[in-house]
Image (cartoon, rainbow, N blue to C red):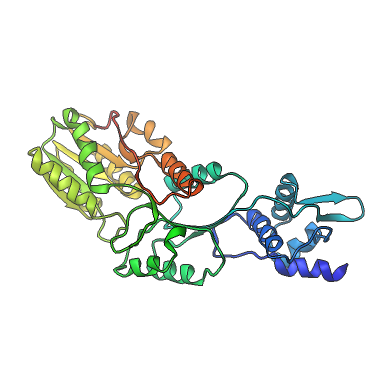
Amino acid sequence: MNMKKLGIIDLIKIDEYSATPKYLQIVNSVKREIEHGNIQIGDNMPSINELSIELDIARDTVERGYKRLKSIGIIDAVPRRGYFIKNIEFLQTLKIFLFFNKLSAHKKTIYDSFVASLGENALIDFYIYNNDFLLFKKLLSNKKDDYTHYVIIPHFIESSANAYEIINAIPKEKLLLLDKLVPGVTGEYAAAYENFEKDIYDGLTEAIDQLSKYHTLKIIFPEHSYYPPEILIGLKNFCQDNAFSYKVISAIAEETINEGEVYIAVMEDDLVTLIERTMLSDFKIGEQVGIISYNETPLKKVILNGITTISTNFHQMGLIAAELILANSKEHVEVPFKLTLRASL
């Protein structure tokens, strides 16, 4: 009996690099080891205290993992015996390696929509590489588990010219690119992506009446940014087609705020600085100076009586990704993009 307890303790792993909540890592470890045949019906689970000490995590975290395992019928508990494996016959057809460049409000929306749409039967290992190509390469290369799908958001700050080589090593029937297509990735694979050049062009075109009271569009686009340069191409084409002046700004803190200008902020930190500097000027926001922000978040509905946004539907992106996996589709789907007009323009 004790050997089985020690054996299961050794099998349950926590990966400190993973962004998957630790309680779910416990659940996923147990599911994975059942599939591998290393855990059998009737095996005793370690107590909550034992596992908490062994993994060096909070007791509440282990308890939450055990509650999830019990709710899906894998374990049960009886007095004086503790927790044991009740069932090893469960539907586990999807094992997904989910790889995001960062975690933000809109990335969380993608994650929540994706996970909810797949349901509890999907095992998801979630990792974040913080826009770091070397970390991206290291984590992806070290993942030798037999995943059914690799879902990847491929955005990097530094040079990543050979990112397509790393991605091409993934079997294409298992690959789903999310948010962005990567030139050089070949074969038939699934994608739910933004058309960055077209989206900003179309969004600004929809706002042409509000933009008519301004003469210049300035985009705050930091030099070291993971945002795709296609955004700048789309802005340039719009301005040229509609007789606006335009300028790319790398640092808003050093830019003079002038009447008749619209500022487009792609980064949240730059938006905060822009709002602070504009409020200190004598110009009225939405009349003399305009503000547009990338990526819709609930807070932008109320700041300055509302910030105009141009944004992908991130909930829809997660939903589309899940649907592509469930349908075993290799389709490339362009995610809807939306302009939301508010008082700042």
